[in-house]
Length: 281
Image (cartoon, rainbow, N blue to C red; front, top):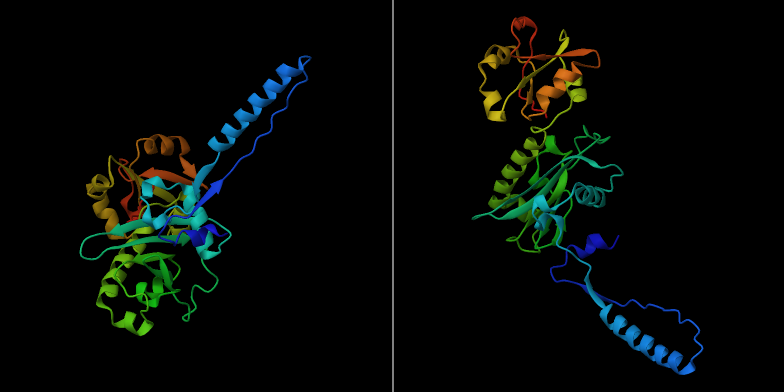
C-alpha cells in the first residue's frame, strides 16, 4: 500500500475531505411553508457541508519514531508484513531507541518460522538501514552478524551522510557500536518469553518432567538457592513470575504427558532435574 511510503516523509501530507449529505423534503399543503422549508434545508445543508470539510493527515509518524507503549500488536504485525512481505505475523518484536552521543532507533522482529535458507552461508542480514527516513540500503551486513541473519528489522540513524557507500560503512566506527547494540537487543528478544510447547522440544534425553520455579520477580528466582545444584546439570527451569502462574501450573499439572514439577518441591530428585536460563510467563 502507499501508506508504507508516506511513513518515510518528514512533513505531514494532508487531504481535504468533503462529505455531501442529501435530505428528503416531505410534501406540504402550504406551498409557502414548503418553499420556506426548502430554503431552510438548503441553508442548513450548506452549513453542514462547510462543517464536514475536514483536514486529514494521511502520513502518521513511522512506527520506529513512536513510543512502543503507543503501538498496538496489530500495528506491529502490519508493519512487519509490509517490511518483510511475510504472510504470517511475527513471533516477537524488540522496539528501542538509544540516546546520548550516539542516537538511533530500531525495530527488530523474529519471524514465526525459520527461513528456508537459514543455513545458507550466502544469506545476508535482513536489517534495512535508513538515514533521516531516507532508505540507504537493504540487508546491511555491517549491522548484524551472520548467526542472527534470521532477525529482521529496520534501523534509522540521523548522523550518516545520505550518499554513504558500503565501503564507507565498513570503515565507520560508529556503525560498529550500533552493531553491538543490535546484537545485544537481538539476543534479548528470545530471552523474555517461551512456551511449554517450545520447552518440550528443548528437553534433553532422559528428562521426563517440565520444571519450573515461581517467585515475585525474575531477579528473585534467578538468585534462588534451589537452582544452584540444578545449574550444574545444565538443564532448563521455567521462571514463572506472574501472580497467576502458580495457580495455572497447579491446575494444569501436566502438558503433553509431561508433569509440571516445581524446582522447590520437597524431595525432588536432583539427579533428574534440569535447569537453564530460559524464562517464561
